[in-house]
Length: 203
Image 1 (cartoon, one colour):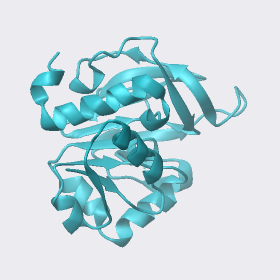
Image 2 (tube, one colour):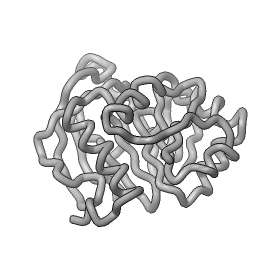
Image 3 (cartoon, helix red, strand yellow):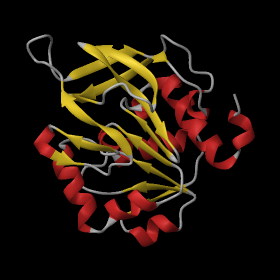
């Protein structure tokens, strides 16, 4: 069963609704012990990175995430916290993916980056199955992850940034798949298939 991390910065209701639409079985988990019973984990997030990290630390979920070998899908702030640091509150993240997040330049365009934007796929991974360049997904964020060795897809707003990343058992998406219509549902289904039916998502 899939665990959705329940903490002070999680957008759990919309993620749960999206999984309901896919017929997926899930539960909410707040402690390492609860997470350990899951087959895979969805790590949602909204709001301030620093407050989100503090909420994870309160119950030791941060250390569990750093060490787990279970598949983990980070969404929005959940993805951002997979990186080493963020200039948002000088936050130290989980550090499972190299890189530091920066804020978009407000002198160049309106911040946050909000609304629908298209992806450009740059890699091969099960999470990308049936995803094509120019697919549009829904974004709401002021900070962005740099394009690096673990970037699978990019997006452009003011500058190029990582829209999908993956390293080992960690996958992160900057957009909100649960609010991105059929394309977002497809990405969530790819994650479910990766967990339960790996043969379905072989590229």
